[in-house]
Amino acid sequence: MPREIEDFIASQGGLRAVVDAAGFVVALNLPLAKALGHPAREIVGRYFWDYVDATTLAASLEVLDDVSIRNIDRTHFVNCLRSSDGQALWIEWQVSRIRSDGMIFCRGEPVAEPT
Image 1 (cartoon, rainbow, N blue to C red):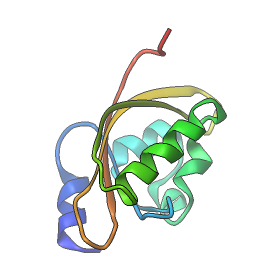
Image 2: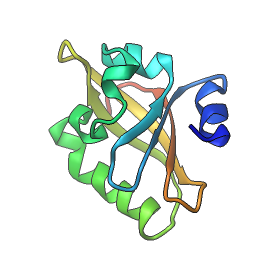
Image 3: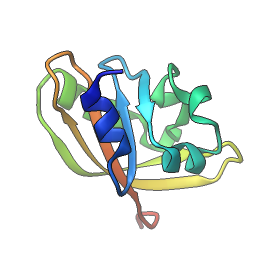
């Protein structure tokens, strides 16, 4: 794994993931794996969309397009993930494409469900 990705995942604070332009998880930190209720090794290589709630999937795919195709960073984006036990996890994300190879860096914080 490239050093830049390792450093990002190891950074303190928040839920962190790196996905490729197709939406496959390349790396994630332990807090995000725990929140999803799966070991990290079971999540890496899977579609991030497998964990996104259907109610926020379309908006999440739009963010991926903004970042990977339009090269627009997205901040304060909220979506809902589903843990292994079905619990809703509302997360506010900062999403950016930092590398030229299309890797997308995501940093999130849990938030209350929007009303």
